[in-house]
Each structure stands twice: as C-alpha cells, then as structure tokens.
Length: 84
Image (cartoon, rainbow, N blue to C red; front, side, top):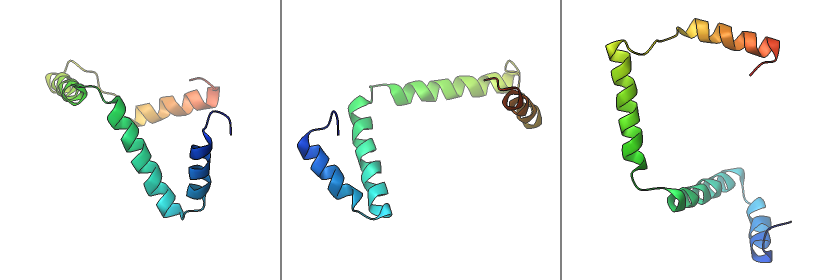
C-alpha cells in the first residue's frame, strides 16, 4: 500500500479483521483524534456567532426563506437537467 508505513499496514490488516462494530468505533476514534489536532482556537465561538447572525437575519426578515417544496422542485430540475 503506497504512502503507508509497514507498521501502519500491519495495523490496518489487523483492523480489517475486526467486526463491523469495532471497525466503526475505531474509525470514529481515529477521526476524533485528527479533529483534535486540526481544531483551531475560536472555531466553536465563530460558529456560534455565525448561527446567531443567521437566526437574527431570519427573525428580522432580512433573510429570504425558500419553502421546502420550492427547494425540492429546483433540485429535481437541476438533477433532471444535469446541472449542479
């Protein structure tokens, strides 16, 4: 396997022998460990501020909401026409 150390390759082979449930738990824990390394200070606060800003825009009427049916109609048309 390219780009992987022999030790990691051995661990992978052993992990692939685990049950589906254990592999899922292992994957979740590995991803969690990566998120901790990449998490930047202030990210949670920034998201909280963004959520508050969006809610305030909705409540004030500044944001234009689109009914679910319209969103579904537009999405279906894009899929039908092959557009993104």
